[in-house]
Image 1 (cartoon, rainbow, N blue to C red):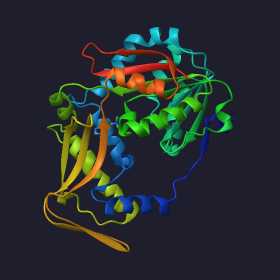
Image 2: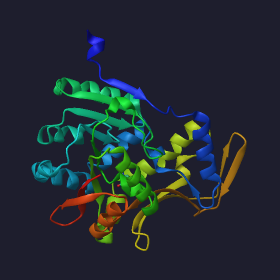
Image 3: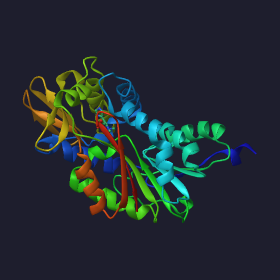
Length: 319
Ligand code: AVJ
């Protein structure tokens, strides 16, 4: 029975087009204007991000992968007992799959906003790990983290790699970690966090000479044009990325290269040349500060691993 072999998929909050349009247009009217970074990831944006992770200047992905390759067995010995590995922002599920064997994973719950792409990833995974019990959940977990009953009642190991937590302000990161602790049901959290490092290294990673990050940034306007009907012309906007040391974050903006008017059904906004739309914050943490944040969120028994340069950190904590 082929259908029975298909991994189960549950869509929890199907994105409401009206709510998406409202959120985007509110951001465009704001002063300064802003677009939430989750809108980077349309089909092309997801591929551009994958290309970013291949850039020599973009160190986070390969540095984190090296930490897991080197320390997965040590991590496995320190893990709290868990029934399910819950992958937050699973995408192609590749990072989690590398942990299945060393961690002895029996149930895998892949969570992502886009459940369709998740279905394809899980179909492929199912062939490589036929013994694994798997479930796909479509959920915008940045807003809330209530997993369906099908994810199981026992303790969970929440897996949040890639320094995606860097998109949250420290206050929002704390709130997110508290929700993660509750969702772990007495299990734990394994999380990747990008660390403070020399500014030149940080800025090169977000302003690569090939222009892939610039394309990734501009592409958000094509996505907004499609879902909110705002008539952005991509050639009017330049990529700006810099490290804000006071806030300990990379900021990405789109800067109007000339005076532009952007129109959408029921409104418009004029941008003067040089005016910016804030598209992303990517916070960089110090190990001690992130450990303190985990403790403040209620986690305990902390462990962490870094690379030789101390550029990226992986933290393990008990819920
Ligand atoms: C996916 C949020 C971790 O902040 O480094 C990469 C996104 N933006 N290049 C990051 C991103 C520009 C990335 N995160």
